[in-house]
Length: 496
Image (cartoon, rainbow, N blue to C red; front, top):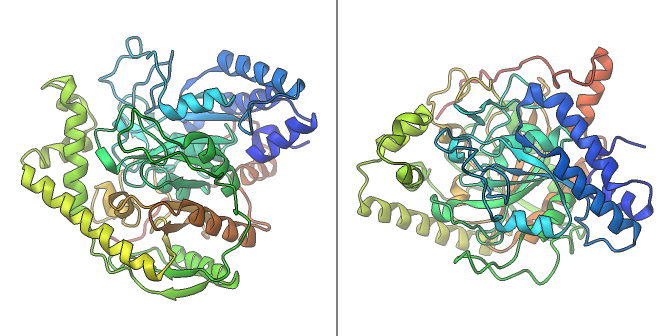
């Protein structure tokens, strides 16, 4: 039998149902993987061994009685340390929060639903301070590594979650995405993530980053991501912007294919620039979509780069995050976060409303665009993972994280669903992601297209944990060896 740590949620549940595998065995395998490899990855801020095994034993008993709570029962998973978790500290990567004082007495909606569904929480994963940027490092916890090459970043801000999933440290993870934070790390780690339509996954407390901030599933396959979205989606009265509870599973119609869909392919949204290997792999992925019966046209959606408007919304939100900590807080946080806030301290209400008007205009434009095209396809990222010690690739034109994430944050502004699915690796052995964006509320269509691509291209595609195992066997390394090839730091001169 394969190592349960490498199994998908679908495979685990099938094993539980058949009696070939126990949730305890799965939890033990994932915990063993965490303790063997997290020293080199730094994906976790909290590992909950005893609680996880207790939950796994309860799940094992339910399966033995033929009475599981549902398809999440016994699935090992992780939670990003931005979500309040009853009985556990939530420190959000910041030295401003004290773990001894911040054990909360309530769960975020997604945490509560996973607990109620019988999922086995293994622990909480790393985030940059208050999830503010596209890499995962903080003054409090240090830098998180990428399982494909531990000297490189897994991206962020849900980098710990992606590193855990890619390494077999849980089949599922829940992350946040305010400007790309589940899609960036999915692209860098060869995993799958979905930023659902805003409001699909309720948030409580509401994010100070406002209606830019989404929560979404992270997994190793599209089907697993859809299964997880079933668990964490649905109305919650504490979230004023929560959408109604879905009336059907997100796995429904997942295998129906994309014949007849109209797909717009934009290599750079009209304002980005890509590493040549990234552009080639994404173009090849688009050909795979066309071969599945979709009508594909290369066209830009007619947007200009909204980065300045995004920065106003983002950094005024960040200033609001720090407000409760008093006037000295700004001197204690990540220097990049401090610089961004200071740059926007003079923004006025008119500036904020102007940025809001810009995103409203983008929403109108994208709504009209999707009257012609069902889906928009782009690279998730223009580059592959770079050194975890840097805030941008070497030689890049800017150190601001939005300078190298041009294809993700626009769709936080429009609140559309966007998925990242792996579409191959470069000559340096690093993953590349394909982004599929749909009209608002068309999450199922996005997942269906992602699954169609995965099914067509996935034959023989090496998953991160499998590659890791193969490399370790070839090198004769022990279980605790660092994963991935030698460092292949991105040195492209493509800048913005």
